[in-house]
Image (cartoon, rainbow, N blue to C red; front, side, top):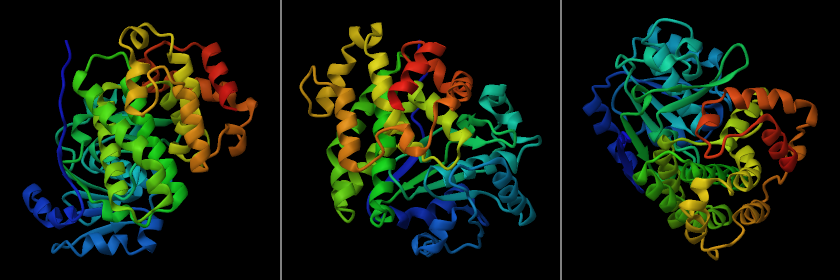
Length: 377
């Protein structure tokens, strides 16, 4: 038996920012906190969004590339001190994840680790969580429709807060905000979307709607990621990438796998490493590891992914990922990012503790993780 829930209200398309003020009204927001990052604050993106608001708001614009507990505390303090009544998160997955954490920490008692999924914290997050509107400015994480937030705790662990109560009440996906995204960020976030679609489709969990959504997202992302990277102002490519990003996150309600258990762990060890880039590097090794799995073979998952990618039915998907990474100009190996073998045990320890480890279609052992890391190094 499967319980399936999809998922929240989404406004998607060019001009969808026009719905922001009405969305605030429907949710009863009269004084929200905006969470964003220094990069967004330095551009006109913040102004593009706030010009649609006719209510007062506060701003926290110090979200780090990998959001951490210290930043969550600082933003939550502004929320409480200024008596805010909701959050509007503007940016990539980091700003949206931080916004999600604020909706919990500003309305619940206890340290952040109390709400971590790995600590049994899902039951501690209640409907008291503040309402959240998510406005993505990248096409990759899909956090605007996700039920989780990844935060680095004070103790260094990168953990997930997972609950239906942190799903944004409204996602506004306006590709206008991605038109100026730099090439490498377009590529890295785009491969994050590709990974979400692939990895959730490979998961053995039973969720046919998620499988269908994942394949559609994969088809859109694979057909448009290079075009969006090479032609940043291409509106059709940007719309398709934003749609693929959203679909990847809608699908990963089903579960992810070893790509994410490894990238979450390594991203916690070195927060300067970009999550989408790590996913792009790990994906080929994990595809090869999963290929012999009974559910992959019996359900012909590799062939179905190949068709969505425009490859021959028995094409080498892992090799195709390596080739597109190369064409996009992304790093091919972890060693190019300064990762060394000496960190393997630490990475593996974190991967075993990560929630994505348990939903990989094939159970990975320590030796399996070592082989995947060696192949990716």
